[in-house]
Image (cartoon, rainbow, N blue to C red; front, side, top):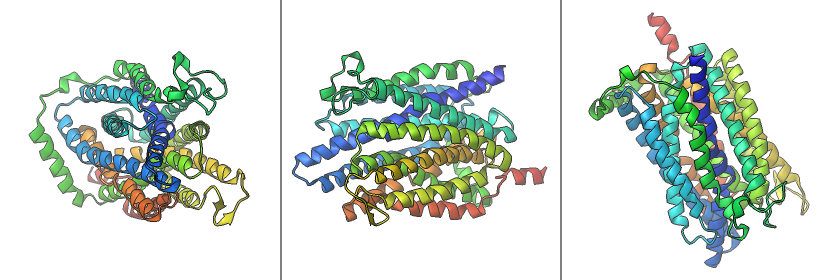
Length: 458
């Protein structure tokens, strides 16, 4: 029972953390911020297309800079943390900064007067969210056998996506304003007397995410235990030396090297879909935040279901076939998105007022949520096959590095292509190339990871 509680406690981290990605990055704050930024640029006299492009560019640059900090800081912090023998104290410290910065996003005013400060605070919140993710991932190898890890990872992601879905429904029902100032479905004034004209219901997403995290991290800290007898004094010099040795040793680990390179590209593309899917719908299809929230509910349900199913597929077939299949599907989805606009679908004009572009994007949302959830779960499981419990934080630090060393790439390429084309839709096209590169590099990844070598040595 103690072990089962530890697994459930670990699941609750995903439940507590998922609203950051669902509410802040993809469906509420990110789209709200680009609307604020676009209106700001319109106020400077720019036309709508240029204002939308500039809004996407500054959002892209924020994500690129935070990605670099996460990518290069994660492995160093992870390696140093491994010398202490414990991870929960680090998670607690990062969580405090995360909560404070998320809460501060309440002050993102609709007139754009402080949007640069809010963009910086969002970036800080993102960094802290990713650092806690590195450390909780590092606990995964201790939760079950190699055969059980895939199912545990998938169940964790599925449970987290259910939490993200519930948080999104609460925000849409009780807080986020429609154009008439009322909330969706219940048609109420935003709760707590929040002022709709000042977008206070939408801005409440920051404090809501912070409070959600505080509440649901309680089971994690109560039920996930660490062996305090392994606790040691932090040794930064030793940690950095271990990290350097691991990096140097990568040339002898062909499967791990290929996997880190592959995941570097396909996870970057997937993150790009999450980061810009919502802004695409707002800028290209002219969706409201409410309509985007409805889309988010569909995507979150799909993500929860397929993350859970992905865990079973992982257990039966192994993580590599799941990764290959999900990456192929997402490549096609990206291609469809790039060829969909308010007036055309694959170059074919659609009648004014047609729902076809919306239906195409809703369908894409099902695949983005579902295949993306299964891909993340299988990727985490694949990394477990390439690391040992003793060096897990460092290993997942490298995993974070592979996912974030080029995290600037998707946002930067999107910013560059958007700037050149002047079209937010065309700006998404680099994601197709990134998925294809990641898929190609998977050829050199061994299905068992490094485990086949360990079995051979024994």
